[in-house]
Image (cartoon, rainbow, N blue to C red; front, side, top):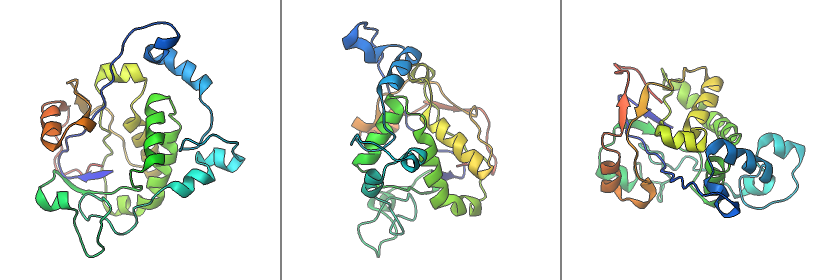
Length: 231
């Protein structure tokens, strides 16, 4: 999560829908039909890729013991601005934050973006594992609940998806996470105050300049914030 004074330009994921039918084109079916098939085929509640039998506690926690041991927590050695892990303990800011100004006040992250987390987020978005949002909301609340409370957040604002993208996927993972975190913290979730009116390219293949240009004029604020603290 990132704590904002006024605004932040967010990112999105571009999905190309090719309407091909048959077994080889199954992954390109419209969202509802595709998700029903994926839900029947996928199994296991682990966040990594190793399939095995899970205990009742692991099923309840949505993470198996093996994958929990592979998670890398960032801990206290993090950038005081964006929350990324630092290479040297004596540093206060990462190289990126030391060079440029950001639009947000402070950011925090629970995990290093390692392989189990990458696999988990990919499955949550592309294999209809919406229940994974509960796991991430819980670990965020466990690690940053006090920080959120002390920051006196007024509203949680999930980054929206382009409407066509959302219809294809069937849900917005950022919105799912925000709603669950909002219930845990008691903070209002404003799902309709920010609108994405421009279809953008995938951010992962772009450099910093390309990302900024890609997201230029992509979002519209329906409510002008005046002093509210936004997560």
